[in-house]
Image (cartoon, rainbow, N blue to C red; front, side, top):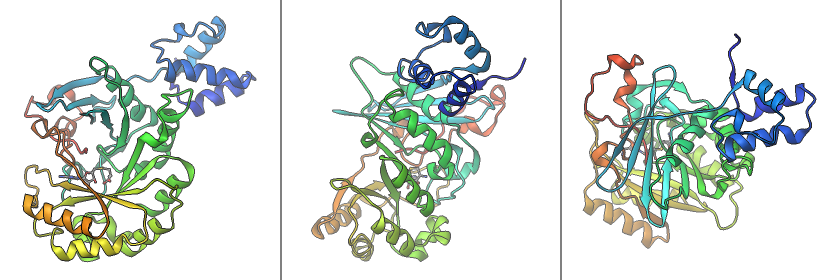
Length: 359
Ligand code: SAH
């Protein structure tokens, strides 16, 4: 028996075209899979039975089920998924009424090596496929309670989304298309360490929001914290941000992890204001969330407040990200899915919940 492919849009469209089917057929099937969340091909009642059978012989429907769901005292829920090859990834549901944000992963592990992030310690295990990215959203919907519905999706979990551009772009299409999950692109945010060519592509090819993890105001410090800065230094990053066609009434979010004595001085605040000059920006300050052997520490509340006030005084829009789900290691930069270290599921000792990387 030949292996069946996951029913992703490009493959379904190619299959339909290869059979000379009218164009609407592929969209009809995709609507069944992604919009109506059909659990099986037999449910596609307006597709002729013979065609359904042919389809089922070629494709499997995407499916991703959480292996565990942990719940934080603050209502945050972390879903751990075991992938077919044994790697583990995590998603985090974050209720902040009236919003309910879902933070999803784009890679198992991450290759960017940021000094303050637990996921980086895993290294890159592999890119996620588009169905694994979308599957996290569908699975999280299955874990909603009462009248909850997901209002925002952020690609701020494990991995660097723009390092996995093609799969992420395919997933964004499914998430936002009317035949797909129909989540407005304005409610989807992709966060990046600052891979310049892919940032440029993302802004031109999609309508999602862009978030850039900045976290330092000099090349010297940023190289130490975020090795990607060797390849794409601050001046080039900010020049690109300045030139991107960001729509009126929208802004680039700059995430800034607050680290004691590393990036939280008054001089840093002043440099940050200067860096952002001429960019439609908002700054999201993220107090560092600790993990074992991190080697960096969180700024004090006083330092964070002073930093925030300096930005506000300079007219910069700034928000402070409250840490959520820390008790289940679901906070930003804590996602590392200790279960993920050993692909052989059975051999994993039930240890303490390990961190994933999300906000
Ligand atoms: N690779 C992408 C997507 C991950 S988003 C990116 O870096 O943007 C994860 C966010 O959490 C990033 O802004 C990152 O800087 C931040 N972060 C990572 N580790 C953290 C930690 N330990 N505490 C707080 N924030 C952290």
